[in-house]
Image (cartoon, rainbow, N blue to C red; front, top):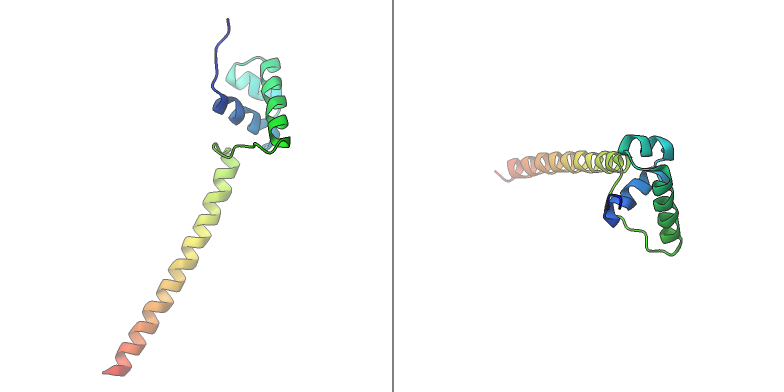
Length: 97
């Protein structure tokens, strides 16, 4: 009997192929898993997506990168707003003296 993989791992591998556009043969070679096995995981993943039971538990590297960039932009925006508020507070406190 072959090696057993949990469902989360199977979905992660399938996501690399479906959403990242990686070649099934390349992923199979890198992970040392039969191409037919990964093909079955991809088929099941696509069926699951069509039924609306797509899990967002695990993110691919490009998804993580996109989220990081988004969060960095939000942090910069908040920092700018904070600096503006600090300057405004300083101006208002000087005028009260």
